[in-house]
Amino acid sequence: MTPTLLTTYQEKAVPALREKFGYTNVHQVPKIEKVVVNCGVGKAEAERKQAVQDALDEIGLITGQRGVATIAKNSISNFKLRAGEQVGAKVTLRGDQMYDFLLRLIGTAIPRIRDFRGVSAKAFDGRGNYTLGVNDHTIFPEIELDKVKRALGFDICVVTSAKSDEEALELLHLLGMPFRGREKNAAA
Image (cartoon, rainbow, N blue to C red; front, side, top):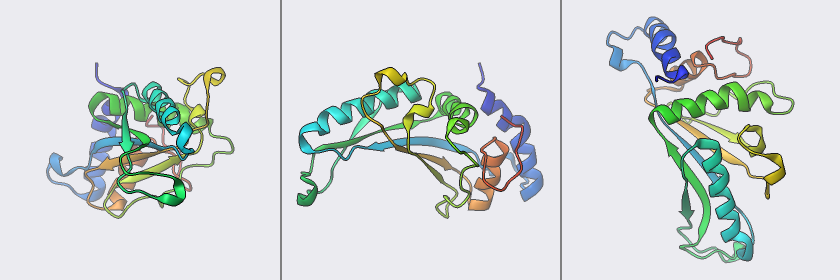
């Protein structure tokens, strides 16, 4: 079964992008390559292992894919951190799971943010990739509030094949990402 967001991309976003940017070949049209969900835990040395395990469990629930612990590359004495210690968790999503996660993020989780007025359109990196910071992981419906041990925040990085930020902004807008200052799109 084809994910709903992938169908939206193929039927609405591709023709609109070809018309707006004048692509002659369908392979020139930007697409989403992967989504990386990253969570760092800044806990004291004694709690860090348990905090990383909790982050792995929560990210696994949210994304539907098991996460990988991230390792510190350098030692930092002020933070009581040694090289080789686990300091966070991450998941890289591709294919159908990526589209399902983005649909849940855009359609369910983001609107649940308190006092939400849209996401910033300034969070592009200059190469067509978009990063969104989430302060509270309980906006996702998969998380049961009674079982939350720690409040987690994480970054969601949407990697696209777009050559510029303008192309990536238009792609994400057509897929339903609610950017501040742009009219609401009924794509998702």
